[in-house]
Image (cartoon, rainbow, N blue to C red; front, side):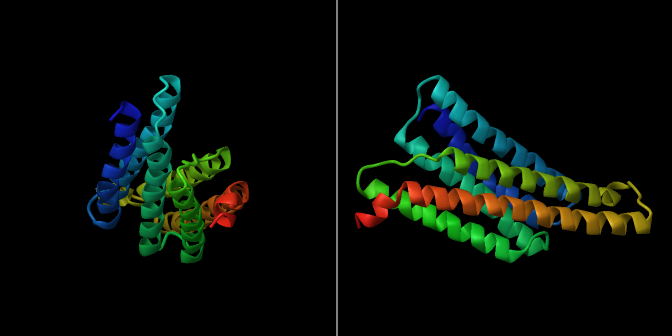
Length: 196
């Protein structure tokens, strides 16, 4: 297995640790989740660059890289719903989009074709990662009192409400990009559907 594919697999391996940091209550757990997510996001940035630069692009990488992104991002969004940080409707839309795109990829694979992610899918992933990092950063600020950083009660309440609204807006922006990229992806690859 080449280095880019190892990075992709490493991103998937980080997901259970990321989910544990999000769901298990311990001091500064959101800061730990943020750190893990940033490391995982960097592997996403690096694997493609290394593969293209060193001509290490493989069919496994074309299929596994976007799958690893989906596993990481959907894990984050589902945990956010559990923790009350985002609307489940946005996550349902994203899930629907991901199932539709993955279904087309599987149909293409059954015909011997590997369909790589396009630029619109990459933009969608970047907006999702920005939203997730921002939400985790905001939650990290809100957990500072657990390690002795005091906020005035009214300041804390304003921050909490502002961060919740900002997080919802960011998730919905990334959801709009998910819809747009899904529609473009399906229209570009509809021949795999019509051939069935």
